[in-house]
Length: 113
Picture 1 (cartoon, rainbow, N blue to C red):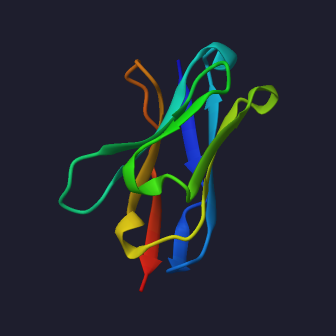
Picture 2 (cartoon, rainbow, N blue to C red):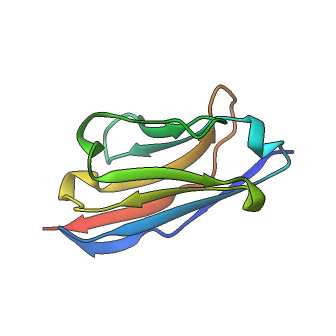
């Protein structure tokens, strides 16, 4: 059974940084594309970034230039480095295996103005 466990969320002031981690188990991590989604209060879950098995990455919309996604296959972990955080980045951040219906429990990120 695939398990994804996110960590690293918290409360930060605007302009600050956080690093999220997602530890995966129960899957051949290295062959899967991994992604981060977020869900703001009252809004739909949206894709933030994903990283392919060849380490190519894609960041979506307003996070370009501020966020970085990376992976460590030896640790079965994917990371989301978030810099220059804005209040609109507030939400619950979820890790997922792209193309499969596996999700972590989410980690809360709150950015104060």
